[in-house]
Length: 100
Image (cartoon, rainbow, N blue to C red):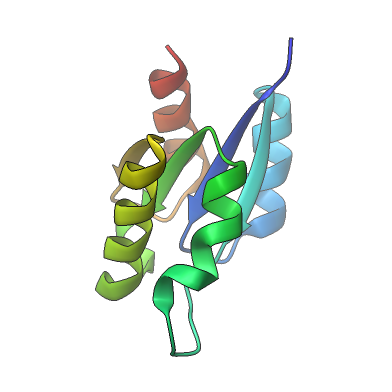
C-alpha cells in the first residue's frame, strides 16, 4: 500500500512537518507559500500535482498564494483543508481526517 502524500503550504517548519508526517505514515511535501512574482500558480504546480491531500496554513500564507493553491487543487480534484494555526500537529491531524 502506498503512503499518502500530503502537501503543506505555508509556514517554515519543513523538517518538523516531514518528521511528524513520517511517524503518521505520510510523505510530506512542504512549500512556505512565498512567491517571487509572476504567475503565482506556477510556484505551486509541482507540489499540487504530486499531493493526494493539501493542507493550507491560513495564518502563514498570503491570500494570493492561498487562492492560487485552492484553485489548482480544485482543478486537479485534490482534497484540501485549512489549518488556522502554524503547528505541524494540527495540520497533520487535518490530513488524518481527510484520509478517513
